[in-house]
Image (cartoon, rainbow, N blue to C red; front, side, top):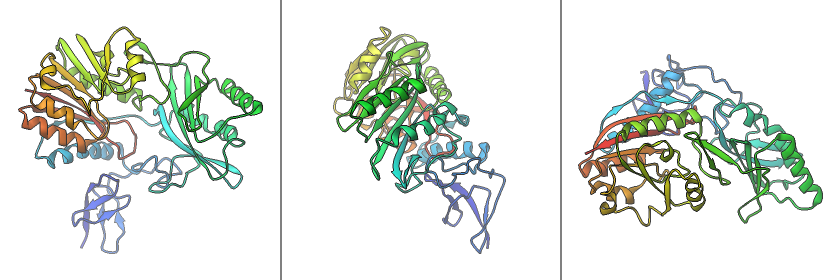
Length: 389
């Protein structure tokens, strides 16, 4: 008897009507009795030679329509587990080759430097010969980076490489190497100049240290250049950021006093009308946001010291964008507060749904949610949502 594939699990496997998990299966496929698949209309030819080995993508075999359906299902499925439902809007999907930041791994083995993402489910490094998610400028830097790392990366040691597109060019952070001696230092400087980098930081185990930064590095948010500390958070794609910003602005439109919690560098705060008060646990981000002169930001750990319901009563709306673990401590206070509107941005549908249930228990109504697929062809789904009371 045939067994139709009905959904895609959180890790990317197709799941059949009988509950069987099947790699590279898509809803609309049929699992035959012999274990083979009859592919349905949701399949496309994966564009990258490294798929499905590379852990950078899990879903390149899905058409855009099937991928959008997957993103929406992650949100509806998470909400259903908490007995919630709402309007789930059409997902926003970032186009290929638009990722402006990435964390890569490098290792020297067999006389050459391997540089790329880890193989799915392992610590083996896929040496990227092509990439369909990174901006072309970022991918073009990989070959020169291999040359830079060859003399300074000890054999079998794994280095972490962060690449980010900043206003001044590419910001590169390397962790797990030591650059000592005049020759090595001069080679590093020469590399940075030749590649026209915005900055190079080296972390030898004591935190990132800028070794090359001809001018202060910034990222532009809402038309405002904001100082960009090494390793600071930035939304993965510019168009994904724009989709999240638009959703947040809609959710709090007309609010006069707004609290932006987990504000980071001001991704949302700098776009908001009215009087905005921001809170963030990372000191460098607070200093960067305050230096714009446009938003008042305070250093505050919202897990240990969330805004209580009394403090929240001063605001007409709250925006929050917590880490993957969600914001349970802050949400408990919000649930008992009189704040009329909440815009919640999440990078984890599961913890979002948990928090949404707490808000619903406090009398809030979930108006809508919009999935955002910034991490193209991955199982990582983000969203923005609106609540009101």
